[in-house]
Image 1 (cartoon, rainbow, N blue to C red):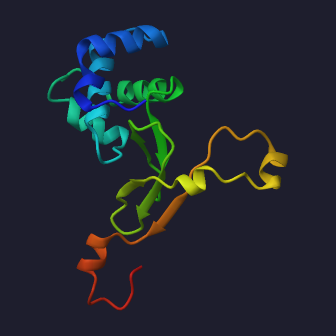
Image 2 (cartoon, rainbow, N blue to C red; image 1 turned 180 degrees about the horizontal axis):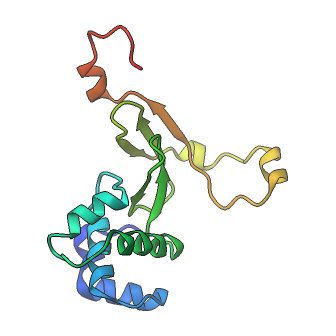
Length: 155
């Protein structure tokens, strides 16, 4: 379910959401959740930490990691693994796919309904139970292409 940023992070909406998910509402969780709902850049835990520390000087990086893990387990956010072995997170839990720039590591979301409606290959179901799937495209984003237009190699 998609909502605009204000309605997702209003105190009433967050209180109700946390209560429905069985999550104890704390100031740290509230601020981390609000920051995630504002995020448009698939931030890492470290990025979220740097963004909330001015408002919560006593929050620890460990608290941010544990809170993001809790939010992911409860289906409030999604984890995205990228090229630098650092997990990144996003508030969009609806089906979508990612383009990852191999140079700047930027992640861009895109819908692809045709892929979403495709039947899984038979071997996928023989390997085990599939809970979700998404397509990840890796390449060079337009901004990096522009910067490197005179360069012989993109890698």
